[in-house]
Amino acid sequence: MANKENRGDEVTAQLNAHREAALRQYRQNSDVLRGVRILASDDSCDSCKALAAGGVHPLSDPPALPNADCNSAVGWCRCTYAPVTR
Image: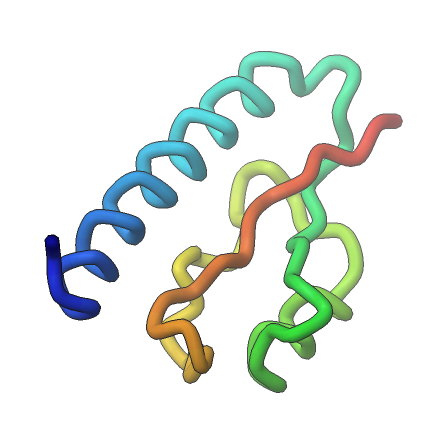
């Protein structure tokens, strides 16, 4: 069984792949999307909650995820992008 640090690396890699693929897909559909919002969990850290409260971000320059200031109790940033339609 993987220890928490190794598990965090695995989860972070999976989340990063998902985030990158989502952004690629959203950018390919920019004709119907005006940007992205950041989604955070109810139990996310304050830094992630603040990022999620930031409104709509342009597809060309969304905030970087994972959140560099995340200090989540689970050990990795769980924020993700959500598309916002026009």
